[in-house]
Length: 65
Image 1: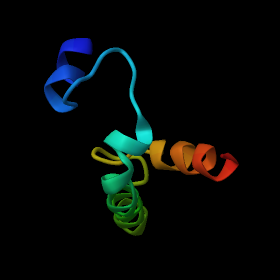
Image 2: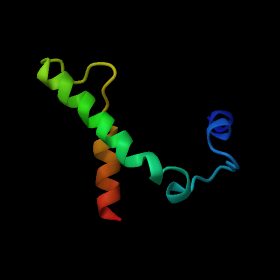
Image 3: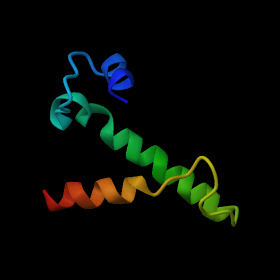
Image 4: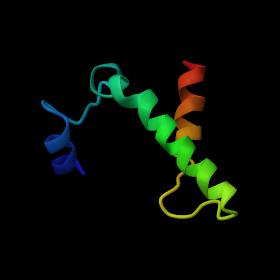
């Protein structure tokens, strides 16, 4: 995982600075994930691939901060 992160995050050193590295794309990522869940639920196929509930966790953590 460290090797993969170092290819995606310039200067990665076992620490991720969320504000610096991810804030810019976070809201769009959550919107995409929510939309995938909504489409799957509308098709009566909740939890199908490629859906994930991780956006719920990150939103929960974010709102607690």
